[in-house]
Image 1: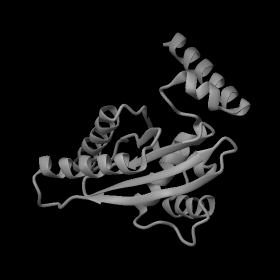
Image 2: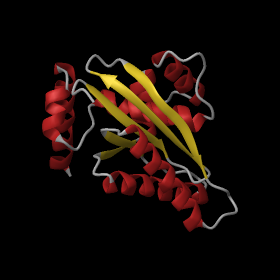
Image 3: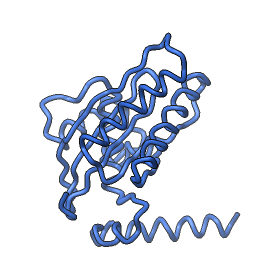
Image 4: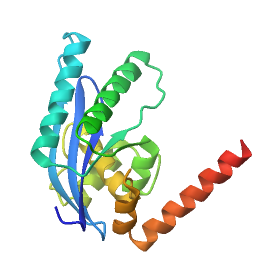
Length: 195
């Protein structure tokens, strides 16, 4: 993989459907679809078996497509506790599989992802799907929505310059991305100092 192109695996965690999206993004933020799929597990299977199925699907994607980093949607509060628990469990599996493969991993909130892809943190699913199709020059948005969401997570990660490898990030970031990172760092420092 050329150092000017980063391959990001995005994961939209879920127990029944876990979205997997992989994109190549160059320094000018141009993105190309590499792979998109959904790892499924049967609702009536034991929880352990469902988590194994998700782990295997993610390991297969990592082996086949050799991403540089993994981005996972951060679990957020919902009224349905069972959905939150399943999402959190699938998210943990994605982070574990990334660590096993020695890949840097980072989580992004749904608002961050929507803002990165559409410019609006409260965009609805249809808006996100339409932008994914437009950005990746697809005839239609990937289905189901979990697949499009996984691609959006990968794009958010690539465009925000997210990585655990600071030296690699500094080398590959544009001047605008470095300025954005510095502004975020300063903002976090100010928030911590007030606490």
